Image (cartoon, rainbow, N blue to C red; front, side, top):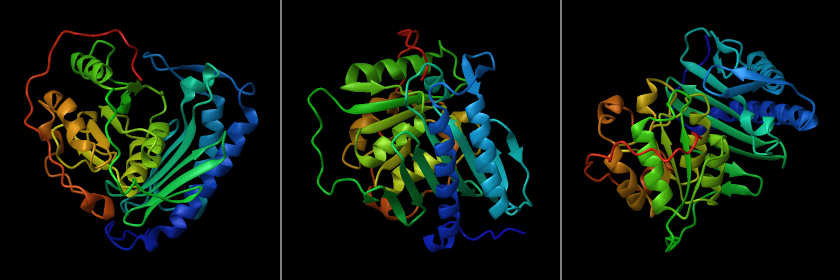
Length: 324
């Protein structure tokens, strides 16, 4: 059987896994870069406006093959091909071979490759690779985050909040309807009270920006599972604090219903302000994460910010902005 170490054990125990994930993501990135923007075909995916390209499929086959060759007993969940069963050892790889397919189809060069390893539901390895710039960011649970220039870390001194508000990113899951009242009201509130609200159609791009310190915060509503662990681990190990909308610890795993994957993430000094923005929309989400294991490591110890008491959100307002 595959080894199933305690995810809180030494980060060195996953060094081989990180090297494998980085190599696979960068190889897939070279493939994507060689065929963008003209060397691919696209087709609809589902009935909610999503798309899939033959680049997704080719990159996924490459990454899955590299992971399967090196760790043949591990379970794999891939964006396009679904589940490849493992031996039950508790290790699951999550592969998003092209995060930003909708951008690629319209010629917008905003996309990345994401790979994560979870032990049970705990992310222990996370990799995000940008094919266009050739940059890679990776993280080990308890071992910090690395980028092209070395270790990633939030600035030691608090950056003051702009008078115009924070610079935020937003994501919501594919299952969220366009007129979902909570999503509409939450997004509208963030648009009104932020300097900018980025909707990138590529959540892993936003996670990398947050880990680098390019943006102040990231808010997700019923986020997709496949790309969440890689991005959440990268941000946490860079010093970002992650919470559910009610202020409870957010582990960043892939398990459970999407109602348990609403989150707010930001630098420690920014988090109280962000929680003030999102906590009115936390009603009904508290039970979805009860019993979730709190993260450990340097990022978790860096902040003890707690949520404010939730109040009822406004209802019935939908600004008409398409989902990110």
